[in-house]
Amino acid sequence: MSVLITGGAGYIGSHTCVELVKAGYDVVVVDNFYNSKKEVLKRVENIVGKPIKFYEADVRDRDALVKIFKENSIDSVIHFAGLKAVGESSRIPLEYYDNNIVSTLVLCDVMREFNVKKIVFSSSATVYGVAKEMPLVETMPLGAINPYGRTKLFIEEMLRDLFVSDSDWSIALLRYFNPIGAHESGTIGEDPKGIPNNLMPYISQVAVGRLPKLSVYGGDYNTVDGTGVRDYIHVVDLADGHVKAVKWVLGNKGCEAINLGTGNGVSVLQLKDAFQKAAQIEIPFEIAPRRPGDPDEVYANANKAKKVLGWEAKLDIDKMCEDTWRWQSGNPNGYND
Image 1: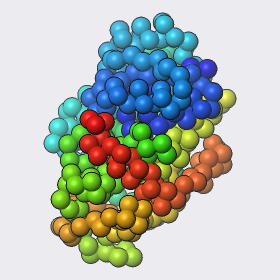
Image 2: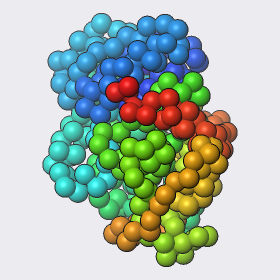
Image 3: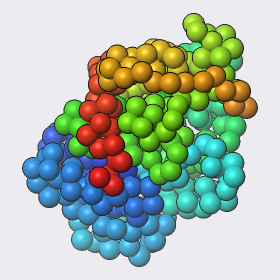
Image 4: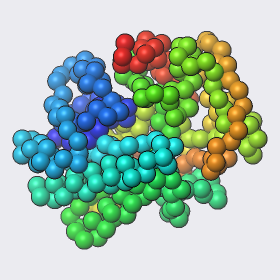
């Protein structure tokens, strides 16, 4: 069984490669290294003890994808490739629509040509927009509020239309929440370009001295300590969710949207404190103004994942922080080390 992983050298993609190989799958990776590095795949190979078949290409390049499908017996696809920074998407929306939507159109067209109709799509909790109640359930109304989220929502709608047009397709739309953590070996982890957009890599870069202090955006939310609450999920749990989703698409037909989260909310300051405990390092911080549109709380109802995929998150916030620190302390400059 060969699984094509677009964006397989990225943060979530690389961890998913490891878990797929552990589960007995053959993987084929395509990545253009826009937000990843070749070094990642070398480290994945060291972890799994075997070579990873790899193509350097942009998923919008139809000829490159046709070559991959001709040269490999692909059974299913996990589609991670895409731009993913919420703030950046508001500054350069056309680039996001072009990259994320066009790549999916090209990918699905080539899949159809080769009669490969099983895909796991990397969606996001941003498709819910600003919900009026928690936890978020898959049946809630959708309404993304930024270009990044809208690309995910549009792609979900496109894939639903694809299934309606041809019921031979099997599609899992995985809406995940806030992935953090790293592989327990400490050799692969999150290494964002520039100043991190997400909380955990920001905290860990403060811990190794790359950034001076943590900015906490908003201290007056209606939460346990006034800071925003989110559902953080260990990246290895998330990767396992993709392994379970591949198994599901290979054995079923349908189009299902499924949350991947823990169902537990953790505040910014609670995460900071847990990281300080794991790293035994004080994290200096300041309370900064709120960011427009940030809700008080966002966390998942993950019951459907357990029912449909047989999946649930296993690793707690302490483990997420311990593994992040092992990665960051061993690689203070990320893969550039």
